[in-house]
Amino acid sequence: MKKDKILEVRNLKKYFSLEKGKVLKAVDDVSFDIYKGETFGLVGESGCGKSTTGRTIIGLYDATEGEVSYSGKNVHTQTDKEKRSFYSKMQMIFQDPYASLNPRSTVREIIAEPMEAHGLYKDKIEQLERIYQLLEDVGLNRDHANRYPHEFSGGQRQRIGIARALALNPEFIIADEPISALDVSVQAQIVNLLKKLQKEKGLTFLFIAHDLSMVKHISNRIGVMYLGHIVELTESSDLYKKPLHPYSQALLSAIPIPDPDVEDERERMILKGEIPSAMNPPSGCVFRTRCPAAMDACATTVPKWHEAEKDHFVACHLYNKTIRKDTDEVAATK
Ligand code: SF4
Image (cartoon, rainbow, N blue to C red; front, side, top):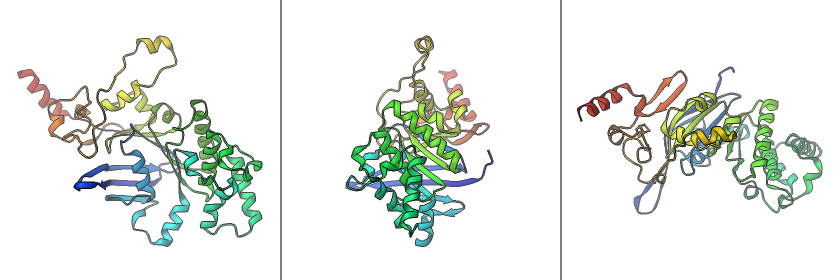
C-alpha cells in the first residue's frame, strides 16, 4: 500500500470540566497517523476514550490541546468555508443506527438531508437517482426509499446510516462502534459491506470498536487505547501474532478460539479490577493497577512511547532496557 498520510493526530487531548473543579481526561496526549485507503482500528474497553478521540477529530468536540491535520490542514483552525468542505470529505457512522436516524423522516429524506445542507443536486430527479444508487450500494433497494426507520431491522438501519454517510461522496469515514449494537450474525455482513465500499470508493476508515475479534477482519493497523492513552500501535497481523503490551495481551486472550481443543488448552489472561476513573488516573503507567507484570517503576514513571520492533510501537517499561536493567538489579539484591 502506498503510504500517503491523510490524517495526522498530534498530542491530542480532550478534557471535560465537571462539577467542583474536577476534570475528566477522556483523551490524554494521543498521536497517530492514518494513511490513505487504509482502515485504522482503535480499540479498547468502554470508557477508554476511543469514541471521544473520533468525535474530537471530526470536530464534534473542541480539542483541549493538540492538533488534527487532514490532508495537511489543521482541521480545528479552519475558516467556515474550509470546514464545510472538510465535513463533506469526512463523515461519521454511529453506533446506534436507530438513535441516529430521525424516526419521522423517510429513508429518502434522511439521505437527502446532507445533500441539501451542502447544496448538492438542485435537480430533484438527479438527487433521487443518487439516493437510489446509494441504497443499492449498501445492499438495500429503491423500494426502501419511502419507508421509515422503524420498518427496518438493526442491520438494515445501519445500512441506511452508511448510505447517509456516503451521500456527500466522502473520502474518510469515522465508524464509531458501527456493529456493537447488532446481532453477531449481522456484524460480519456490515463489516463485509464496509470492506466492499472501501474497495469500490477508495475510502479511508477510522474504525472504533471494543471487540478485537471483528476489528481484525477489517483493520490494516490497530491502536489499542486504555484510559485516554494509546498503549500499542502496529499492523493488525503483528498485534494478533505478537501483542507486546500486557493490556493488548489480555484483550486478545479474551477472544474465543473456534477450535475447542485449542480453546481448552490455552491460558486466559483475566484482568482484575475495574478500569480506573479518568478523573483520577493512576500515577506512572495508567494500566498499572490491573497489570500482572507491574514493577515499582510503573508507579513512578510514565512509560515512553517507542518502537519496540519495526513499525510496532508500545508504551510499557517491559520494553525499556534501562528500566528493566534497574528492576532486575533491585530484584537480584532482595
Ligand atoms: Fe504493566 Fe508496567 Fe508495562 Fe504498565 S509499564 S503495562 S504497569 S509492565
